[in-house]
Length: 386
Image 1 (cartoon, rainbow, N blue to C red):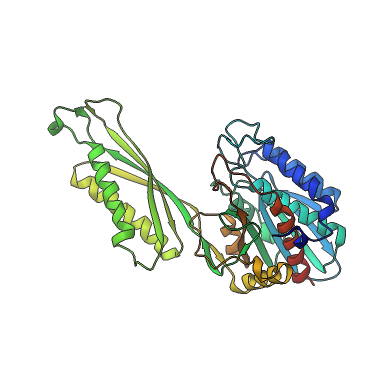
Image 2 (image 1 turned 90 degrees about the vertical axis):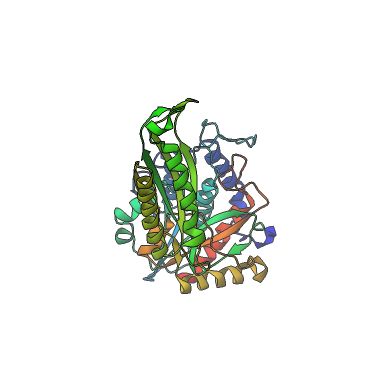
């Protein structure tokens, strides 16, 4: 994406925005711990004339009004980092050991800050814009907490938008999809209780490892044999923990898994099928088992009209070449879904180019996206609040 595509009024302060991004990258903070990040964001927004309100602990909403228009739009960015040891060797690599911006939330935050500065300086819109800086996206329910604390009652929006960078999509290309765009993300812990004994006398024990292995095998049939092949779902066992010795059958085994789906009814089915498999397989071997199933975030479902509008803005701003080839929904989850359940809007994606994957210890947000994303945010607000 050529630099000429970046709004000319954003170009002069882009170096400062890149420096802010690097500052955030050096000092990453985990979910609901984003104190330094939140202070920086609040200071910048207030200096540019936004009304700043704290919400959901470290979360913030900046409000800017212009003209007498009654329409309102919300733009969301996530702020939290991941518990990852960084291996990029960049000059601005994380100095907080075991914490890293391995998903690009430092870039999302900076991009929205750049857009906020542009909107404050130009004020070329008629209505109200809320810039929403969300804490704790990475599995801790920051968006849900914001909604619970009255996000859209306190800051009503006619539409809300969010974006995520995606490695592998060409730099600066936009991807818009109506309907489901990210998966519902759930997790479960299975505890199998058997009876310990000597490894040489298995007849006197109930082996939870064997029971667990049978459960693992049966779980593989949920997607392959229990759902329509044209539906999409994932169930992955991420951990199988049991025993320590060579010759002792342990008392317990623990399995941990993640489940992904798009349709609400499929989400319900996967959970029920897991419960059936766990309890019945344990009973076959004379063991007991329990399943603790936790729903983390629903699927992001985009409003068709809001998505079409955003795509038209991107086309008008950057040209048709800026649109990525049609893609299938992503299997990662994002709790922006909680906001989309309460307010019509759209969650879209911008290519990060040829970078390491998200959540990888060698990942880095592409600084070239800041100007591109901020230019789009500005155009979206100006057209929505024309």
